[in-house]
Image 1: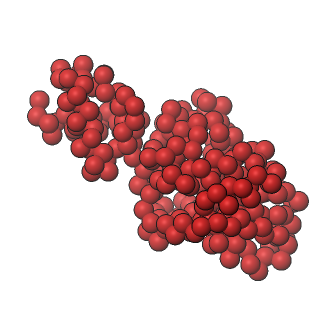
Image 2 (image 1 turned 120 degrees about the vertical axis):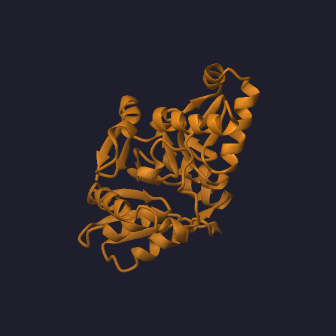
Length: 251
């Protein structure tokens, strides 16, 4: 079998099963695991998959810069953001992550809602500037321009003094076995620290993030109590999450 044919079959299995196991591919192709690993390395270099120990997962396209991410699944993100905004109860203390979906969520908060929003995203804070009934608490630190959020030791230290009702988390990938992931090391630390300061974590995930993975793991998929997905998200893409006991809410 030609290398190009092996790679095509690897991608077909990845699309069908949501993961590839190097040993299984080696047996199926009748080649060594080293040969399969080389195929996976080359496919990963093309951005077609995310290598993990023992195989690969689908890669997430949601690691582009902030401006480009605004154009990805814009309608779906707006619907997810609107649904997420409707879940906030009066008087709650909530944490809003950075990212385009959370900015849209801030935009959809009802004008009558009285709550406290804690965020490390200047973009979220600006959206809430004229929202008279919402107290905004900013977490400071070094500005990570790729995602327009504060990161670093000072941001994590500030989070240690927070007890929130719910954290609305943005991710670049969520996978039943690969967990929650993002494209930056420091962002992964920040998201993990924020989740630890909230009684409940809600993940906002448009279709391109489902069953996908990025380089840096935030935590197990079960770190999320709820995942809000697009109304037309394929059931096959959410079945693995539901099987873990995660509530899947369609926008």
